[in-house]
Length: 264
Ligand code: NAD
Image 1 (cartoon, rainbow, N blue to C red):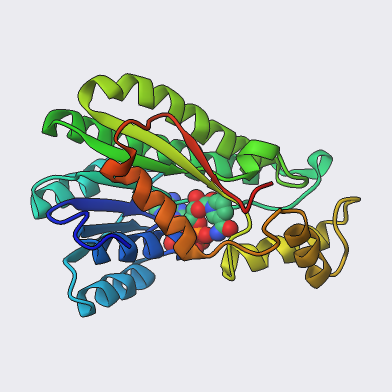
Image 2: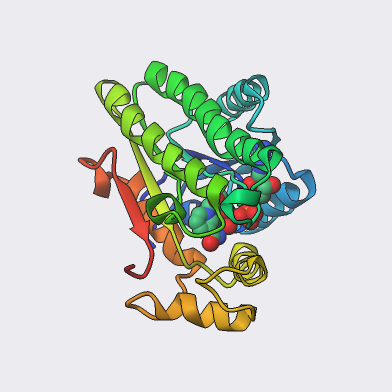
């Protein structure tokens, strides 16, 4: 925590109603930022906005499906009207997809994962980049995943989508540097406790592969024992990494994928 680091700045967070998004929103708000939450889930989003306001922060929610470029443009425009400008974007909405071996992976879920994790990230990146270019700069962090570094079993669509997020990050970093906009990615791996951690251990156990046990509790141990730090990373540790990349502490850092993994 660096109190005051983001004073007077505005952060737009997609997937801001979810575990990682709301934790990053709270961290940056605690460091001074005003927060625009963008999410599909209106009730959860309203609860996050209320929580931020109750803590004395300025926050607004924008219901938006990131797969729809018009909705994204409308949400970004509304946030700019409300806050004056967007300095930072945490481009984070995502969907983990099914856990199914490659020969059985269903096309409809592959398309759904690509639509949310790739087209959605693209839509937000483009809309925010246009605004930041016109406003004179900014910083963007895209949420990739360690799945997009190693290609874990049974996660064909998710791994492909997160490799794509790294490609978007690298090219956007080059294209936007002349406009004073930095673009980086974070790749969390074993983060929990939380929905994604529970879901992935249960679904990996159920998928029936040579890599994981059929008991989710054993899968948890197998995964945790595979990293040097031998523990889960916390949501707060992801938030610290994102806040660092958004901040001036990373003023000469762009096009980087920061693996928040406990060391794989
Ligand atoms: P989460 O499910 O708690 O949050 C995801 C949020 O995205 C939800 O609030 C959901 O409503 C929103 N969302 C989904 N589709 C959307 C759409 N079309 N438009 C707008 N919002 C949409 O999950 P999380 O753990 O907070 O994950 C956040 C990001 O982190 C995702 O991109 C995920 O792939 C990535 N990630 C998570 C982990 C982990 O272990 N939690 C690890 C690596 C990467």
